[in-house]
Length: 116
Image (tube, rainbow, N blue to C red; front, top):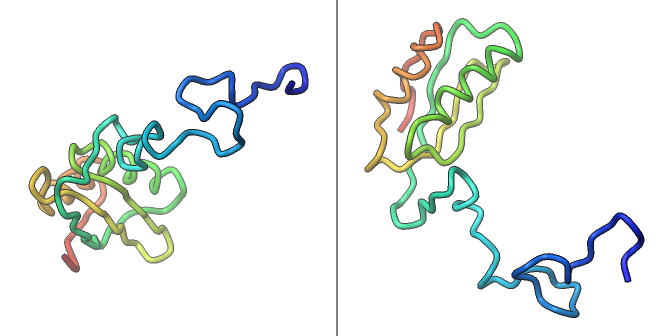
């Protein structure tokens, strides 16, 4: 029995009963399906690096990250303040580099694709 106030594995649906293994592969959501409830595994992902100018603080990084991440088809975004760049992994059948640049520019920063 788990200590009071702590749930055990048996307390959650979809877990292996009586094991410490946790949810099985069959019941555990894929890491891709956790983001906005969509699995992007059906299409090959593309990685693009954007040069972003005008960022001066952590809030700027968050604004750019959120703007790019809000686009349908974006799997991940890594924005670096020091380097002034954003590395974006996305489904090119759902979003284009032009869409990524437009999202950044919509937040008031300048951006250009430097690799794709």
